[in-house]
Image 1 (cartoon, rainbow, N blue to C red):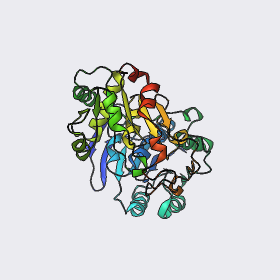
Image 2: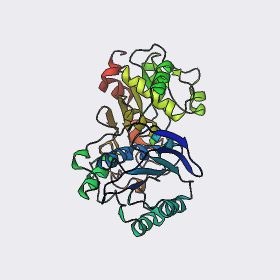
Image 3: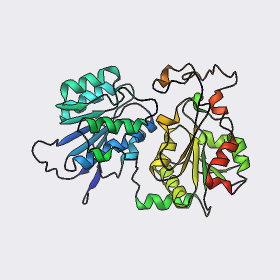
Image 4: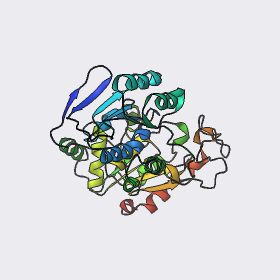
Length: 349
């Protein structure tokens, strides 16, 4: 989409794209995508929806309502006209404000809590508000979104197999290359996880086995904990800078290793090969994509609920019924499993 100009917007809008909209009669002129589930990974999983909507309605203005800091992943994306951010705790008022002031013709939402779905259904001429309906235990979440939208004729059937993609600028990609020095086939470890139940206990053993070849990425507190350890530290990076480093890993034939976290989904969405370590979350539903390897710990765990994760006995407090020292499913994925199953790592053994 040529001749676009991104400018800072007033009020809660983070960015807008200026472009004329000439929409054929009977087609939506304004599309609103609502993703207020709260996680960075949740937004990445909805990127194929955004891109499929843009392909179906290329002349429509497409606005995304989401949370910070994930909103920056949409900057420079030609499918997105405007990005609006909701304050945490103020999601419903933010949705109502968008419906009132922008009057979208079509709304697609991943978010149903606090009466948000009902408000959208009442106020929008056309909407799809339940992308979580009747999920099979082995269908990826993102694929389920697309399949539902195609069944309701909101996107084209050919777009049901679209993968997440984060758009980076040439300058950002060049910066990502510089961060990795001259390392060939680099390995980047992402040891942090947003929930205790997703923490992997074997990071130090893996880094030691990699014999100085690995980089560690994370927030300053994570990097401080790794100082003097068996891996090199990347500098603290803003989210788009980190995405650019992941893209450079992909171009160099390296790999990004981590758990079921938002940064790992970003890595996959910029083309990096990934190794995902899955415990309480089923890799069949939340795997990182076709170009990675997803390792499932304790696949036979009787307490895992593939379609109701938040109801698992371990989910909120990481209290595992099978182990007194932490999630048994995470511990079950050994460093040797990571090293053995990933071609990019075999040469270091």
